[in-house]
Length: 200
Length: 200
Image (cartoon, rainbow over all chains, first blue to last red; front, side, top):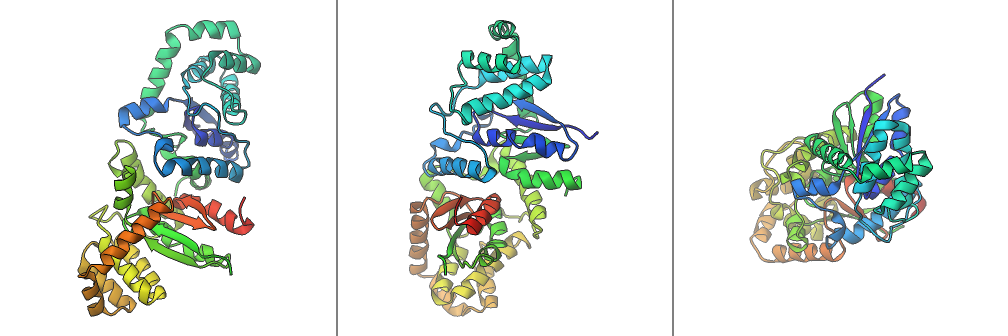
């Protein structure tokens, strides 16, 4: 079987959410698995000096319009959450803790977090909600809560962010197919052709 | 007949060039004409504080890779010009001077300028080359040279840039279909569906 696709995303990224709803089926259609890799855009921006487009004078209003339209274009549920953007450390730390124990569970958790945030508008920065979502997906809530109070999950996420930056990730979503980097959900047509043809 | 599509672009924008090669056929397939509207990204960045992604630490190398790949994806000739990005005032002023006299000629000139720059790598900031391209497209070279030495073409371009910004243009290419704004050549699939359905 061919190499898995790497899918980097921040839980606070609308285009990351859209990609999360599409990437597994897209990969499966070409016999590929997907490695889900949440990271913190804040860590990237700190290093690269970038920033979200939301605050920009003309880009900001356009961005909200493009979120809405792209959700309709892709046929996905969508709402602008009351708190947006949001801190996603707890969700990302939880993902890696789950991923070490049960990758399929971690994958379900990630999609559930995205849907709670961008389809239902819930505050996924809250540890209680993250624990609820993880427990509903099948995680051991008490063990997870204990882990979130410790240092190991913090360090793991730091390492993952550093690794993402080392790979050249500077935005969300970011997808690698056999080393080829694709930034943005709007690169889906190019990713499809790449998977079909083995590169073009 | 339905309203023309507005197509804003900077002659130094690779994605603007890609769109220039696609937009007329796309529009014609849905019974639409296109109003070509060059502007200066520099004027936009001065007002909005944005900037090109080329200098950014991780984005820069990705951008060059994406230019190449997107050109292959769209089946278009492409080279990174020796001087890039470049000043496009002379080309843009020439466009509007031609447009006042012969819109079809101005449209041909615009495509020829883009191809000279991004397919052949020639220095389109040079007035001599711009005059050559305009003359080859059918313009009165001497009259154009005289006009380029005057103030009117400068003021016209300033007005067009101000108008573009007033319409919300912050990048290149920027397309409006019945008032709906689309930024980037990667929005072609959404533009197509918008034209097919009358909005979604």
